[in-house]
Amino acid sequence: MTREVVVSRQRDYAYEDEQGEQRGTRLLREMLEVAILTLLLFIVVHLVVQNYRVDGPSMLPTLHNQEYILVDKAQYLFGKPSRGDVIVFQYPRDPSQDFVKRIIGVPGDTVSVDSSGQVTVDGVAIDEPYVNDLTNASYQPNTWTLGPNEYFVLGDNRGNSSDSRDWGPVPLHDIIGKAAFVYWPLSDIHPLQDWSSVFAAIHP
Image (cartoon, rainbow, N blue to C red; front, side, top):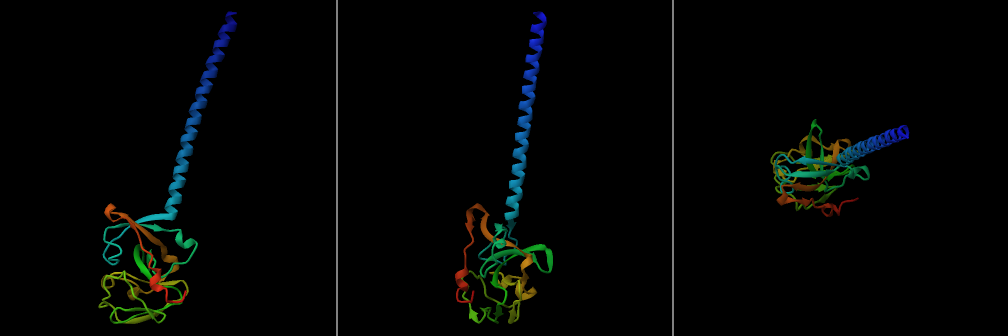
């Protein structure tokens, strides 16, 4: 009987120890699963959305210096950039820099800017309510015809913007995404307005 009792107690202890190991293993596995899911979620979100800080006044009054914006990087996976979109792209002359400007012309368009700063797209003069200053003092009147996958971009603050008037169109492969939302400072949180109606008279 004594031997049976001793053996029985040893078995109970082993069973409890095994259960303890199982609980520890299960907890570790659950923690690992949560960490992996969190990492995957972070990667997916980063692939779809990215934040940028606006540096400079070239997009006034739409975007102000030191504002933070969210950029939708998935937008153009399912469609092409459109006239009026505010985009972030790699600067064609230095891909290490990212710029933010507004698309004025899309592939196939002929864009003209006259001495007064008036912009014409395919013969249609556009009225741009989002522009801060039409002054064109830094640039001579000119006309550009866009090739395949080329986009003509301008800053909303025309008198203080380095844009396609200076260095030409932006290739599609340099476009990172569409600026969609201002999220900082908190007092200025708002989605960026869709100005596609400005270009409604131009062919699709």
